[in-house]
Length: 112
Length: 116
Image (cartoon, rainbow over all chains, first blue to last red; front, side):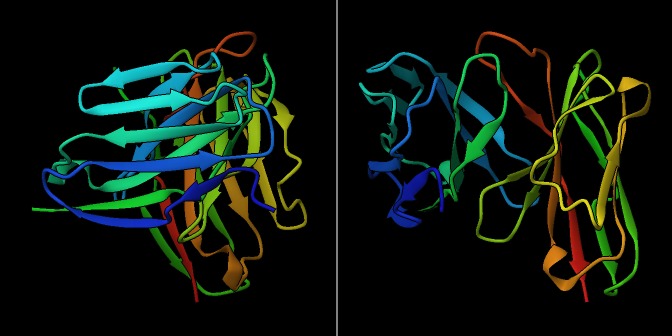
């Protein structure tokens, strides 16, 4: 059973379009992280959200943590080809425990 | 600051052979992780070290996988003997903090293992 469900698994859009991907769980997390992974590379941390309802922005990327700290979304505005990659969400179940549970990822392809 | 280093980047072996991967974390990072990432999946934690002690190895298949972190710095992960289903990318990550707070894990580029 996957602790974190990410949807959609695959998304292909044109450059300039907006997109939203989701990370859902029935479990509560003390914090949730989003990573981007490009082919042949390890995941790179984009953001950490901690507080329920928290919204963080990173240039054209907007991350939101659900009020109940069970889900999160990533919205990309005016997507660019450089945004192509596998977006992974990872949740930490308890404070003081750095163990992360990863979802399967959202594969995003931005077509020029 | 140098990132997490891993070697080799690619390895092809036959089933039942042995293989070892090496990881050098970011200097000063006390916590080190080994993950297995099968194609189409997210990373799955195999083992977590705090300095040279094991914190969590509950998902490590101990009948064939072993890992050590001598002197609390670099680490090796070994598979003996390998099975076809071990084909995956093996990622090493390190973190500067263990305790309360939010934690950032820094990943290496991974070792892609193909078992034929």
